[in-house]
Length: 240
Image 1: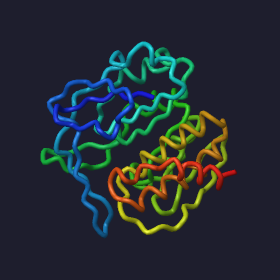
Image 2: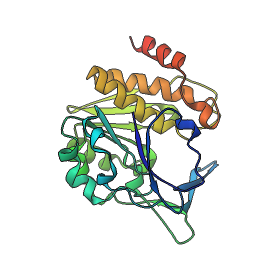
Image 3: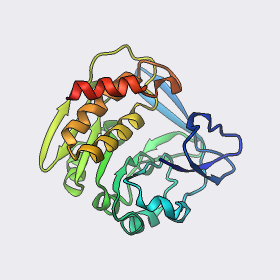
Image 4: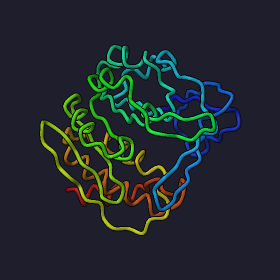
């Protein structure tokens, strides 16, 4: 496992102890403020990191079994869609596109935006995970993306997730938990889904597992929401 990221000098990597990190120097790390209210989440972008090039990925990582492209504020450019298949010919390309689906005004207030490179990335992806919030609940847009890519999963917060595969659509309900902090739950879902998909080649089982694991994460604040080994094994047993 390894991470390529553009990071500001003061960014702590303690949570990634033991994981190789290629650090692209940047004046700032991408920094959001999430503001939760009755009408949902509002975001303010305070800093945007420098772009990351596909050439920044070490050659030895080009044989990785899974490559997860996860921009949060457009850090990955058009060159990724044109070269990802050539750079990672044997990898499962997992994409969480939210960073390509948002823009912001001069004050940093974030709003949804059109995904300009949608067609190019969807055709190369092995699986795509996004939230209903990312597309403003636009069912036509979701259906369009589902027809352009191999596997599409739409997360829906406490309602669980919906998987589109081979022309079929299936919902996975989330268990009820006391919600403490939802930040990062979508990232945990995506990582769990890609890992189980690569291991089992079964999208249904992967979606069920990821839904269970991500739901457990919202019951704890901040980085405490990272799944424990015991929780991973518990969710695997529930899927089996």
